[in-house]
Amino acid sequence: MYGSLWRVLPGPVWLRILMVVVAVAIILFALSTWVFPLVDGLLTPGQPVTVDP
Image 1 (cartoon, rainbow, N blue to C red):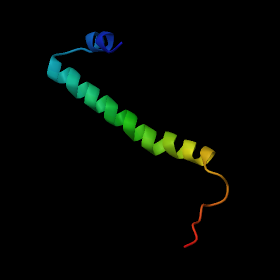
Image 2 (spheres, rainbow, N blue to C red):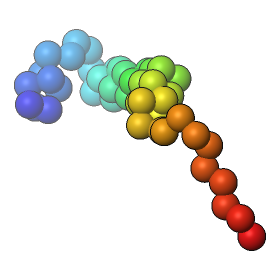
Image 3 (spheres, rainbow, N blue to C red):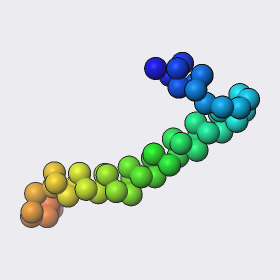
């Protein structure tokens, strides 16, 4: 899968590496901005967790 993706990307090797790094950064930003908070809201129960000392 990664080999076929690498062959589809245009340009020289340095440009391919740059495109992959930018794509990974965009995916991580989208996950941390929208996906992880949504999943946290679905998994966290309605009451806050408190710990008594």
